[in-house]
Image 1: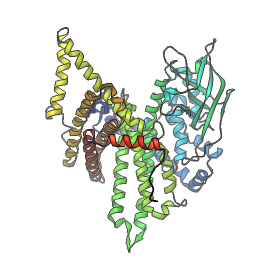
Image 2: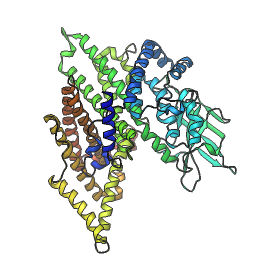
Image 3: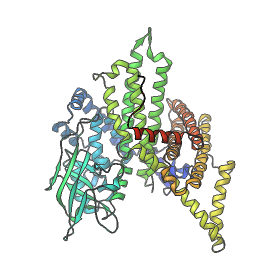
Image 4: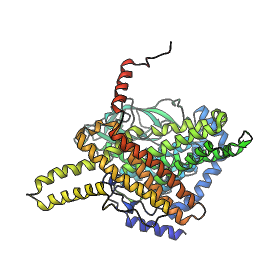
Length: 591
């Protein structure tokens, strides 16, 4: 089995079109089948390590169930507990073996966070903030000297890392940061400013810091800053709604001298470094969400079977069964997408930023729905702190805010895809003028555009997703083929209508973003269901049913969003928002 898995991984990697983004191609009505089918397996090396590691995590955290709840209430993690995480190697998960780490792939790393999240979100956050974003910049953008100097200490947990980007006036708008780094005559920098809501801020020995610089090549630079340097300090532990045990503090830099060898990446290219870190790190968050959902499903099914009402188990009632089945659908879909994105990262795909954003948005919202319904099944018990439901509900709420709010990411998804469509329209205009000067190029662009419009209008020339599918899955594939074309037509139409002003049409961009999310998540679910139908004789049929159910739900949502592009209440909503903003209150009462 191991040899087969390795062979499949190599074959998949060779067949992939690494220069293509699945999500962005959807905006042209195209499905990049080579990057979706067959569903990718875990690497053999990861599988071997994960078997031992997931078992070790369970053995370590299960007996600490009551302690974890106490630490959540008291809002701290004891030093000896942090030391245990070091001893287990949990700070070196993705650091290469030559630097003392375990060398897991992104897929393997996401699976570890999925396991730890089945016990406690704060534990996953302490590990994840270190690996996903805290020291990820050194892995992605660090030079050989920086890697040799810091990675062994980061792998051992001697240094725990934190990511310092957010400021009081710069959340989603990262470009507006006010922390400054003034370059000195000797090439060093003097760093001044304050960062807020920094995960691991109070326990970190190393910070990846972003500051404004006056470089001619850009206005932001990334720096590696050690917590022990003069002028570096952090504030008290923040009193949070959820993930309370994890360390979150402000971090202050007062005339901190940063040597030139601690510039991370190129001077002035800090924004690119930051976005690279956030895009690459989103599988950790998604993996954690999937793990949390699995625990909630286990708890909810036990509760539904054990609780009796009207002389029957509530598991027999339709509305409870509806909740349980939807939890399964959401978890399967999220898991399918998260590990597909991890596969893209591990395989060296050039651009996976939109796919990573989609997986983050979907997984973060799926666990919140699952937590809500699990608590509802538990009813009064779910509202009591004695039971785990209320904590998971609190802990999961941050996920749609973390690492880019879901509102910003929806706009990013839509605008990223439409940017390429807009470029093609610009090329079309240029091609008309080019026909006489460069007829081969001019007619080539026109021919490509004409082919796309014919495909959108008639369906002729639309590639069909792999033919050897279960009958239900064939029907699912047809839905995604149809709505990929609908997305292409919609993107084209909106750009023609609004031009450069499209960036201000946020109601419409949200619809485009949501269609894209349903398409990509659905295609990942289709791929995995096809794989399990072929390989899992025990549960493969249920995977097909999940794909069918998700597709029908997605079809209704996509159809509604397509209709909403033309017929909607956007103007009324905007006027109502203006009204309440002017009033500042809800103005009506019954007395």
